[in-house]
Length: 538
Ligand code: TNX
Image (cartoon, rainbow, N blue to C red; front, side):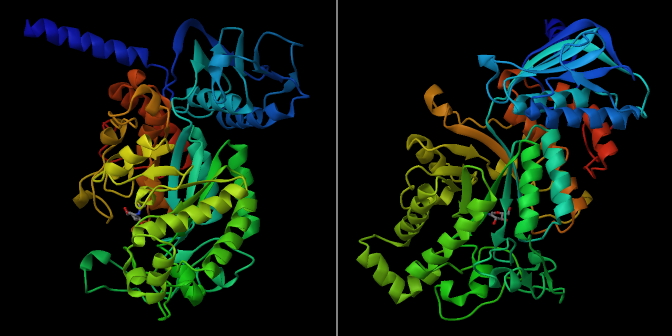
């Protein structure tokens, strides 16, 4: 009997691997393998309605990929003048495809790409690009196996967060990262731009934020040494000018990625308070933080602070056109609010019970300002403490504190589920002894893959509040682009599949096989991924 079960399980496993022979990550939600191949050669033409400017961008990504693969640039012609040996792009109107879905039909005589929107066309192109023969050198003829894919994502928020405060990452790296997010059909780049060790966004109304706040006098070398901290003695810093930010926002939009900027409050505000001491909650001036961890510096809750934050946010809203702004809200220990008699008086005058309610009042005030400018706020799950501001979205991160997740869902708030246990890519991914120094934790590729973003307590109706998930790359221990890539890839491939592919379609064995092909693209693109200890490395 045992033998029969073993043979059965083997066959099921084989079948599922066979079913996933289409080497696309994240795996499409509908694939039908067809007979035959389509051959791309010098005579293959690209066709689309040349008056439809919106298609031009996505089509050009496809042309560029073919040029890299084959060395030739495919001619573009107007729609329907030639039907064979063509790749035809069309905007259609198919309800089931939604905003980001697409159909990709590879037949022996033509490839048809269709979607309701340019976003969908772009994702079809990403799938097509992954099907190219990256395992071999550029070729004159490219053969693609025929198939029909009808695909659309499980979640609308498929994200990745990068902390650029602890370490600053140059614009060239951010652009490369955006390219690579797009390859994985990630559509949200959450950009952590302010924190204690550095303010990274130019704000014209408050130049000291970057004159002063973007630089620290030195950096802790190994913060695990407890009270015996060692410092490198070197000034460190940098920031993004508004001109650079505008370029990056456009670069992201061209790849259908929305940037969600994060301006931390009321805590993680030491760099801002170092720049403008009147924002602080004590009379003792401070400097930009030189080490990591939770610092006591909080903005004070007086009108001058809101004047400041509203000016800052007005500039932020102009730079970032997306609907959400992230207002942080995490790890705001209340010592300075407790110790300040004027702040205690404010709590009394406002009729609040304690400092948690003051934080909630603070965030609500910012939320109302954002709302008046047509923006929504999202905050880390601590913003549920003392009462969740109405209409705020919650970013759930504390795996060991499930209460805010339950409260957010019950309170009808949209939620992005990004718990430390599955989504913290600053954690080790292999045995710590074999890896560069990291913050701690242990998050392997298969563990990321096993993540289910919809909490088991959710009803079908409540599940709709889960907007999606994201990977978080905090950078206390990640000071270079190379190391950031090592921590991100290929774990991001696993998370992308969690966010895009329906639960029933996921298959880790199939994923690791397909990952072998994706690694060839990583190599071609010069991504310094973590190749060691991968299940597919042998
Ligand atoms: C917690 S996640 C933080 C960050 C740290 C991170 C390190 C969150 C909202 N706050 O400030 O960088 O842990 O893993």
